[in-house]
Amino acid sequence: MKTIKIGVLGLGTVGSGVVRLLQDNAQKITDITGCELKVKTVVVRDVTAPRNVDLTGIELTDDFNKVLLDDEIQIVVEVMGTIETARTYIKQLLAKHKHVVTANKDLIALHGPELSALAKENHCDLFYEASVAGGIPILRTIVNSFAADQVESVLGIVNGTTNFILTQMTQNGLSYAQALQLAQEKGFAEADPTNDVAGKDAAYKMIILTQFAFGKDLTLTDVKLEGIENVAVEDIKEAANLGYTIKLLGIADLKNDKLDVSVGPVLIPAKNPLAAIQNENNAVLVTGKAVGETMFYGSGAGELPTANSVLSDIIAVTKDIVMETTGNRFNSYSNNVALAPASEVIYPYYLSLTLPDRPGQMLKLTEIMAKHQASFKAIKQTSASHKQAQIALVTHAMSEATLNAVKEELKALPEMELLAAYKVLGGNER
Ligand SMILES: NC(=O)C1=CN([C@@H]2O[C@H](COP(=O)(O)OP(=O)(O)OC[C@H]3O[C@@H](n4cnc5c(N)ncnc54)[C@H](OP(=O)(O)O)[C@@H]3O)[C@@H](O)[C@H]2O)C=CC1
Ligand SMILES: N[C@@H](CC=O)C(=O)O
Image (cartoon, rainbow, N blue to C red; front, side):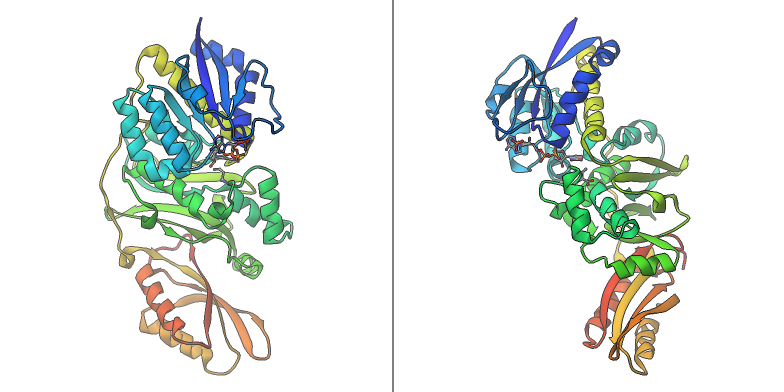
């Protein structure tokens, strides 16, 4: 029987899961692929740190060359994170004709086209199913099952950490800081959780999803980005009173042949299935012109769910090695669709503002909105002191350009402060 030797870069949350799953499911994997898959070498930073997996028969080293220069190793799994180090290592590995599997969305979102081209040039596979939505097999599903359909939108909860934080704040009364610490302890958060809470991790995933669903290469600046750092408990409560749940949502929407991609807190109607997605779970809704709406749900982070996606890539590479079909791009769809201008991006918005608690202030706000043809369908005073009132309102659908104009006018009024402006899902028709 053919034995395929594997090198692993990183033995943290995901790397440990990869080693464990390969050991636990060895027989099934052999039955399916006809090959024995063996981890030969694992590269880490600190070889003296305690490890919670069985490393019998595996060399643990801090020397990358032990993998790079080992001709026996055919597949390398990069689960160490970082951008520049990982990029350099993967380029060197591909140049040595080693197949690469990675979970590194930062790297793929920023350097995917370069690395995919290099992989093809060297007849190597480069797969990264685990880079989006952890355990949900969404990338291969888009490649295989939406190949003949026109995708109209991809939207969803694609960051486990922020969904975990918002769930814990909403349901268990945890503070933002307590919930974040718990997400870190559970291994969902990135080494630097700023990327999670600021929405950057979700933006990287939306860049990859957009490439797969629409064939469009984006840069980070093409994605409108807002994190959850400023989502206040009052907003969560007020949204609930109005019949909504706040989630960090990635949205890639194609309308009139123009694409809009954003990540930010969004109010989701309680009846929408996305409102029910709890904790580290993710859900991605893909709407195709032919198939209509489909939804993919599962664990978006954590050791074994993520490792399972990595293993599905390893098995795909193994099959390609056996069939001698390596070197095909993970996704070969390319389409240079234009980005939508702000005047064509239409949503209702949730606005939360403070204003002086004296007569005439609401009129001022209404006048500003009316000047830009904006109006609201629900409004509520959420708190009041003897000098200030806080209000929350849901607008009728309006363009992002209108929202920006209203924001600019409000900025010029020192007595009013716009605390939040979040999209509301549903009701986009004006
Ligand atoms: N955690 C999750 O749920 C998910 C993570 N991912 C992605 O998977 C990757 C790994 O994440 P995760 O397992 O959580 O990360 P961890 O921080 O838990 O583990 C990182 C591992 O990489 C090693 N490492 C880091 N830098 C280097 C380096 N320069 N040279 C050699 N080894 C290095 C560390 O070594 P040492 O142990 O010695 O410190 C550690 O073993 C990231 O790209 C992440 O974005 C993707 C989906 C889900
Ligand atoms: N930090 C990420 C891990 C998986 O990609 C998340 O929380 O979703």
